[in-house]
Image (cartoon, rainbow, N blue to C red; front, side):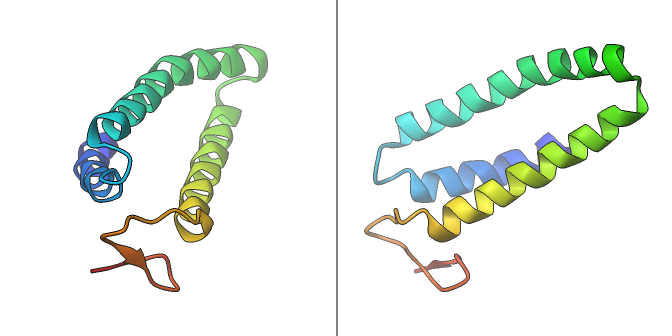
Length: 96
C-alpha cells in the first residue's frame, strides 16, 4: 500500500525536478533505485533475521526509513540544485 501511495507523488516530483537534467535520466535513476531496493531489501532482512531474530528487523526497517526520509529532505533543502523554472522557498517547498 505504501508504494501505491508514494509512486504517483514520486513521479510528479521527478517530472518537476527532472526537466533540468532530462526526464528519461531522472526516471531511469528512480526505477534503478526502486528495483535495487526491492532486490536488496529482502536479502538484507533475511540475513538480519537469521543472525538476530525477527524482532530487531522492525527496528532496522524503521532506522532505514528515518534515515532515507532525512536524506531526502536534506537533499531537497540543501542540495543547491534547482530547476530554472522552479525555485524553492526557505522550507524547501517549490515556488511557481
